[in-house]
Length: 363
Ligand code: SAH
Ligand code: SF4
Image 1: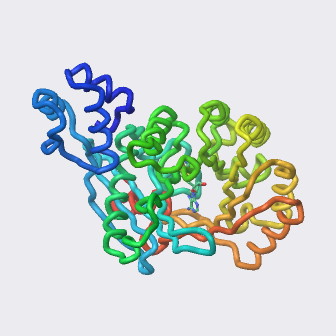
Image 2 (image 1 turned 30 degrees about the horizontal axis):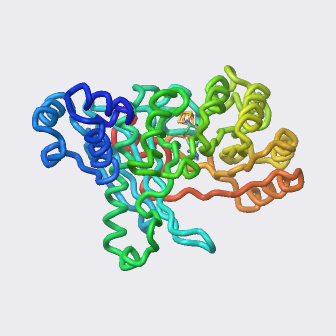
């Protein structure tokens, strides 16, 4: 049922014989009240309720594993889909800092597996299984929203928040398993459901989509009129180095990718976040930082430097602190802003695809 856009749901309810207003109530029941059963939806006429019950289930995620990191800032869930596929979802908690309020970010998967085979990525090493549906993507956020609301209710602060302030899940990042822009329609469909004002109402500016760098889809996304945050996985500033770890670079080399990013920025007036996973000895030298600085000088962007989360079989290690700082300083010298981002939940295998690899043995 969560595969349907709001307009499709409305058309369905009307076709079955109830007024459009009932469809709006149904949408609210599913995405605002988080109801999972039609049983007590007495606002629907009995025949419509029975017809829906016969044809649909509201959600279909079975949680087979759930863990919280030792410091309590990250939870990780492994879900089994009806056809047996396994996907991962992560919930991250950020304490208030300065003017920023408490944030809870959910990292969702968009595919079971991934076809792009980046060598440092646990998902990439598992191969492509299938695309996720809109409902399967949205349901990951709803699952974590239920947990977040329970936490809000339990904390005394929950009662004191100012009217209209949103708690629960505040941010969604498309950085779990799979390549979101390879599953373009369903990814965009899920974003439209998540940001709908009558439902969960995640602020679109609190949604971040990360892509391996699919050029045609980046250009297409620029015309969607969705002011979300776009993150592009760059991970190298020259084609030889990038192709060594990212097979996608042979299809869409760096020049084409940066050109597509410039188009995106021009059309949307939004900055792009470039992800740069630091792989020691591969892409973390000061010369490579300088090349990155030259490549991105004058581009409206921010670079996220991410020390690699070493995977089971992967050959890569994290750079030393001195190495990271020198890299960042070189970027700064070129006028390119960056942040070094340490990943959360290392102890629960919160990195992309790592839990599934451990539990399913990479099958
Ligand atoms: N397919 C998309 C989104 C999912 S991966 C993409 O590649 O952008 C989300 C981010 O995690 C990407 O920037 C990816 O390069 C990064 N990543 C993958 N494996 C990692 C690892 N072992 N350590 C740190 N980051 C990793
Ligand atoms: Fe796929 Fe992204 Fe992993 Fe590359 S990093 S294999 S594109 S999920």
